[in-house]
Amino acid sequence: MANPAHGPGGVNQLFIPNYENALTPLYSIPFEKPSTPSAPGTTGSEGATPAAALTTSGANSSNASAAPPTAPVFNPAGAARAEKFADFQQKVSARDTIANIAGDNPVITYTESGKTIYANPTTGKQVVYDNAGKYFRVEDTTVSGPLRYTDQFGNPIPNNVPLIKKSGTSQTGVPADVRKALTHFTDGD
Image 1 (spheres, rainbow, N blue to C red):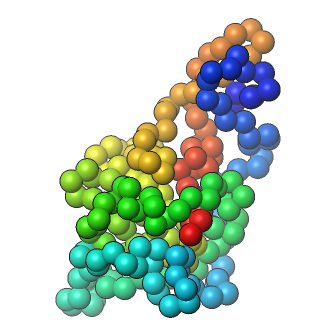
Image 2: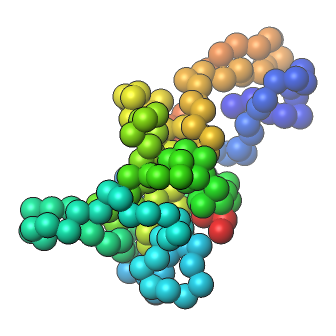
Image 3: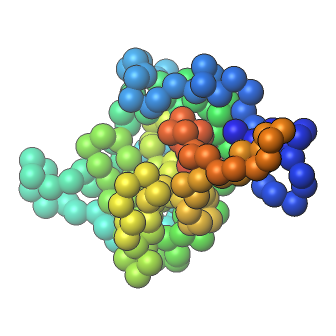
């Protein structure tokens, strides 16, 4: 990756020292049980989500065995991932991101895996919030592959970035671990 100490200026750069050894893929994390499953952005009310004041228009309360959950699910794996990767994630307000991406009337759904999804059906963008881990991603459902995950404002993370070397500047791909660090956000609320 580019080193800010050696850049020509005027170009956004990211430098993570020893990123090859410091970042681990999310799929290789051991599962651990969290100490207390409480959601962010709350003042002690169990099960509340970061946008508790928003309408739960996507919840479905029919047939429990076939229907998605109607309340947040807390999966211990999310807390384990959050603990392991929190140092690599920016702290960002989930409440502000949800308001910006999903709007005033998001469609809210819950998954068995412990996520709460705040979707904007008009734009196709959604905030996927991990209830136990208290972290989130922004996803553009109109795009496929790794580029579907965006920054907290819904802007895509580019495939290539400038690589500045003594011999000149070239383009290099964004490693998967760096991409994950740029698209996962710890809830700062």
